[in-house]
Length: 215
Figure 1 (cartoon, one colour):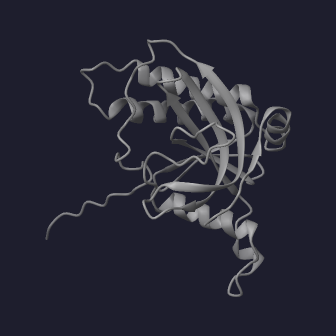
Figure 2 (cartoon, rainbow, N blue to C red; figure 1 turned 90 degrees about the vertical axis):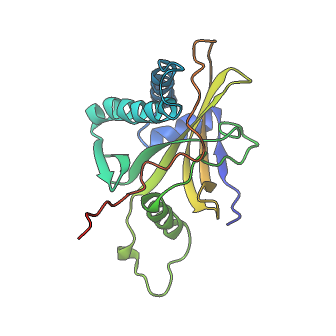
């Protein structure tokens, strides 16, 4: 799907975030908390742990900040969402590639996404385009799902983040298209934040693995 997203920066980004009941300072603090958690890992930890720990702590920080404001946590399958009181906005967390936070970029998630993300994206698509003949407007949820997309750029020594609304998953399983991108800015970091992110091949947390006992 080839869609040119609306890219919001500066005052436009702040205004759009306000419409969603969010602000850039809170979201950047959330991203920094996740980065700090990943940085506490040492070379003796499993190689995939920094990425998983950073992701999990970011989800927790997002909920810690938003639940007192009337949002609630919701886990659909293994997809952790934070949903506003009006049930119109849901936010989840993902690691993005080097284009994350760059106005001219077209970011992708670093890992493949599972069926729950695919369902959320399908609903986002249906909210943007005319309804197929076999669907009624009442069949489509009014809740839009957004990704808090985070990238730690080791070369530039900065953390970049954006809140973006996904509308497509590519053949490789990664989210690769957006209807709207709200850029949150960049945060410099020093040498202590040097934990390696999880491999791009690390399974998405919303993938459900069923284990059945043999008869």
